[in-house]
Length: 505
Image: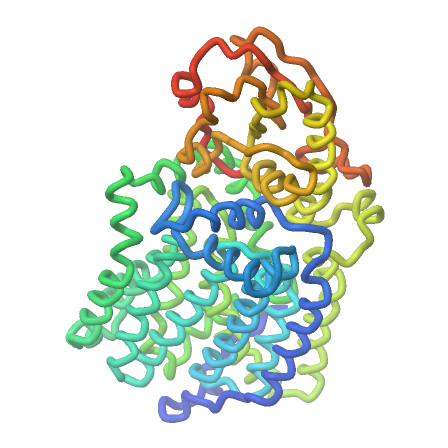
């Protein structure tokens, strides 16, 4: 069922804005946040979250693979709310709530009343994407807050003809440069679309350029980090494209459908149609072609990750909810049908995104790919700790731990202390820049690395094989070797460059 935009039913220009339905919207946000809070500590931290927590111990203006904000948020959560999965994820919970509030404001700005706002909120909040944004502390969590705010401010600038909102949008983009550089995609493609479709009067407003200037000034330290470090983000994007690009592109359409759920697809498609057809939305119709251009750029240039389009999809869901509200008004049975379709998928989508099942059940039926990363890290630390304790006493003070990826490094950094593990090193992404172990370290406990990596060493033995303890065969780490290697034949400074690896977990 595709909800068609009805031009004759479109609200007039003077009727475009509607009040935000604070009470029903607040109830939805409160209920969703309460459910998320219950499961916030479920399973454990993901590889990215463990990495962010580790980077948070060394704050900076940027890192090899990302800007500065997420490690700071992870550090904030661990210090204020507790150094646990629950505490570290509280900032994600707040981001998820903020996204829903901004979404309601976007619907209201487009003329959607109480029912339209509720439809948009329920559709997004009950989707795998909505649950995930408020649960896992990922770049997407904070990035969606930035995107929704920029969309809201831009809509207000165009629909109200009030240039002060360009300043707000520019400031928000500047702050967004500390979260994810992809935020620049939104103003670039949208302003280009405005130049083609109008209203071109926006470019005569000096406050647009003031907003741009303020955004650049605010985001300058993040950009300067890139300049002074040889633009590592481009190198990182190229590495991710080689590693994941083909698979991401092959699954792009499927992932777009699954992200917000099949029942919501007709809603955001109707948002695209409505932006083109409704006369009252003529000042903001440029959003629709901007979305289509962004799709092409993500597919051709940015490695084909469907979640890079999520900010646009949320805006289109908001527009589609207004269109759907007009469609529901024309027959009493239609609201039950549309809300019923959205609600029908709420339960399975909840299971897809949240750590609801016991770990043993989840191990047999792993329904969420990201949740697979969260199971078994304490078991890894315990097993590596056993290997360390099994070393001769004279070798323990000369031993270090070396991991293949940042997830393993972050897990052993967090859980290794209770097992007395020595310092953890890795050549993955930013951790390579932290440098090699000291030259005095001539015994290595290697996690996830193959024996071929240590081909020049005199001795390298398999001490154990990792077992997550719940039989989760889908885990990337399951069955990996834990090695003990001795007899380094090169200095760490000579050998360290060969261990550098860029890419995802």
